Image (cartoon, rainbow, N blue to C red; front, side, top):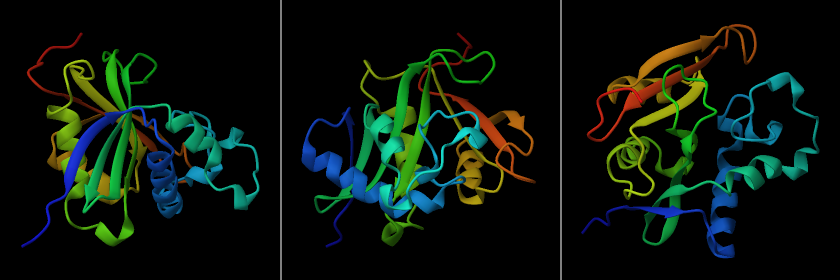
Length: 190
């Protein structure tokens, strides 16, 4: 019998055990991001060149300290954390024209041993359709980089619309791209 993954909205992590699990998974995914999370100060950082140089041994500590205050959707298999997605609820600072007060997805991590199993898609589906009413918003927004082909494929497949592109924002030939999707039963802009 195959053990199914469990997915849940946990809000802001409030136990040391969960925070430690999240930290360990974040460390495993640090270099999967451009720029790496260990070179960032927050999940909503806008200017990459302003990142102060840090001790590599510190890892993504500054990023983690800011991210851990956000709500989480987590994915477990046999009790082990294998993935998570964080978001800012009804965020009004996102740079997606016409979509204020969206849930802004900030970080998606899947344990490298579990990639290629459509788990990121399950996290997106949960964030789009299964959040409790107090956490839901009419729109989901996010950003990524133009060479993050795995995520871009998922976004296209799930019906996200690219609405903003910042050319060469993350380096020569690497743009920052913003996406949105109307979710749930909502069909109009706010």
